[in-house]
Length: 327
Image (cartoon, rainbow, N blue to C red):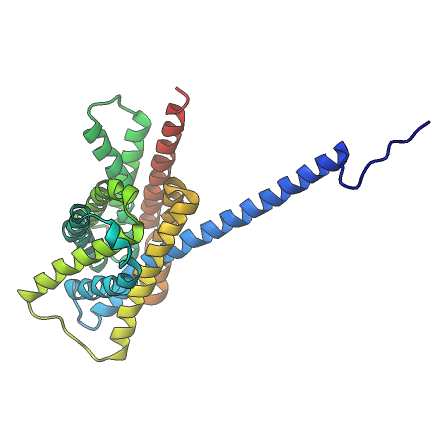
């Protein structure tokens, strides 16, 4: 009986299957590590944005107001981003650049102002929770923009749940709801949702760093002009003030801004939005540790209502989009 000689370069079916399985396991391992890294990147961004209110409260202790704080924040952010966007600006038309700057001037500047005023009124944790009413506003605005559509009762229930949660968040131990805090929190979420919808088309054709630079420039111009007709920007040589300002710029703006765009590139907008729901948790924790803030059980329950409804709204929209692909 003759035996068949198998060259060293030839593989048997068993060897081939083993190789495929090994490659598949290695690929799954790499995908798992990549996903964990992406989650870590989102959590870094959520921590940075959650710390913005803490930095502002620290600056307000040194008698630095909202517009002064935001002037320094956006001005320094724009200055630090300039070297990164210098070459990329050549590819951006004057019309698109004007739209970005206008978006920062009318949208982002107003949203940042109402957010810090909400922080000053109801605290960092409650303000961060109220911001996450924005998915409900995005859904409502998209429905209005696309015309009358069939009523989705699950969406209606989630909207009611999120709004009930917002009322609970604003109910302190005294039992009296802060109407000013409610108005500021809702305004922040509404303006933020409009900014997201307006910037959607720009983000498709223009590099995200350029959008960030243009928005920061527009916001800085708005606050700088406002400060020209009001008392000037107080410049304190106290090292603690400048340390806090630079902390807001780096920890609360540059790092989370870069991290969130990196996460969107790796995970997509839906998963990134869901994971960024951890931002209020960071804001609440930092508020307790750094500012001595406290939240009642009723407020925490309201926060859970907002976060759960926002997660289900975002996840439901993703499910609907996947369904349409197969219809």
